[in-house]
Length: 480
RNA sequence: UCCUCCAUAGCUCAGUUGGUUAGAGCACCUGACUGUUAAUCAGGGUGUCCUUGGUUCAAGUCCAAGUGGAGGAGCCA
Image (cartoon, rainbow, N blue to C red; front, side, top):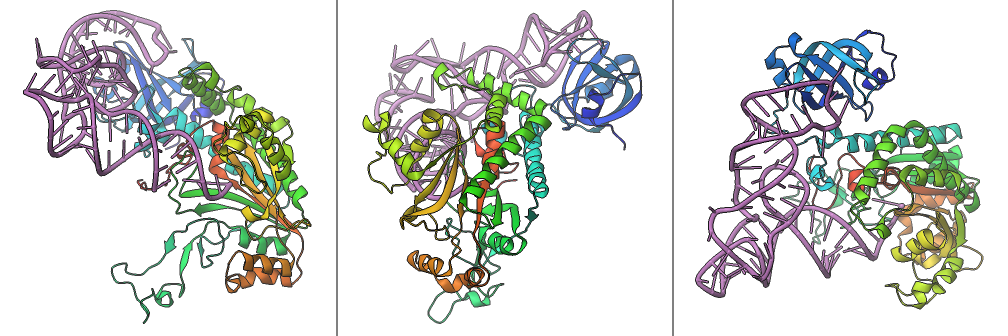
């Protein structure tokens, strides 16, 4: 079955040439003499118009061309006789590959709510909105590999099943092949993990970072790009139980290098989708404009989607220390007027969503990198500063999304790291391998984690993270 | 996990201070018409008003619990 991609057909010069296309019917218009079929194969958001002269086709065939049905159409490509498209395919032969009963097929040529489409996640890729999102998602994934490959980073696959409980990034999903109705117990009644598949308790990974560090301390520059799991009972527009994370790690690099990399990386990704997915972004942009028409003026976005992406690509990010951010927030109007739910008062408190939003959306009106956080609110592996109270951590805050990147310079000094592990109450036996990299040829190194779905959210303008991954996993939901 | 809001036709939604037979657009069916653009025009209503219990002469409407969904918070990417 050889079909020309509709994306290629639409950009071809019409010369009455014979060709075949395959796809799914979006709509059929017309009646007695001629039918107009809008066919889409997912290669582009646009549809190809098929002309079916009723003289040439059985009524039975025409009746089966319904919204959602799958066709192979052979015909010749001509300049369109109507306005609205440049080319159209005059059908010579139409084969119905798969019927879609009009009474049962849930997708209509009309606007559906995103909530409804979430309930039919097996069919939603057939909508313009979701096919656009998934094409943009693909482009971003491809661009990530491209970016790192061009800069000498090696793609490292870190384990999805992990035996260490020390990553400290949240609740984990247990991995076991025990018969859950009859779990082996030790003499004192505890679960006997010695009898489990890996002879120890294992979980799904919450981060590939610690292993990525091992890779960087041999290959100099590596990155991971894989699924990550959190068993948190989070019900928000920006959390998933299963999500994808990108984690570059560089040896011989300090926090400055880390921030430079992250900023350059994000700019590259925005530029890449602007260049490669213009049709999809245009569609999503118009979709957002339509959606926002229902909102009051004050709640509408200041910038159109593509302008927002261009802004990220072209404007430098603001870089401020936690202490500077703290001072700005403490002296800010909403803080003095007690408009914040959490009043900024004492140095050392973690920044809340409302504070991050104030910095990014109101005060600087651009992405903000906050660095040198109080050590008490950050992870054990982050490098301690000379002041003894802050660590070399950095978060990149994006408008509408919040934290899109979290990174740090890693603590490379064996004694300091050991002290911090102890202070965090972690069993150092569990991290013996991690500690050994600091014992043998340790070097300064840095890295960060980028939430892939949050990136896709930003690039597509989608507000709910469940709409930028094909099959979302959230508390109480693992259908499809 | 906490707070708030929502649940009416296949979909999107309206339904007044509780009051007779439950409403619209789209989809669908029938017909007309047409190089149409989510085609148009005429006709056709397809329903466990989320579930259970309660208040009342009377509940889609009020109350309680449950279920499902959404938004915000926390956790974080």
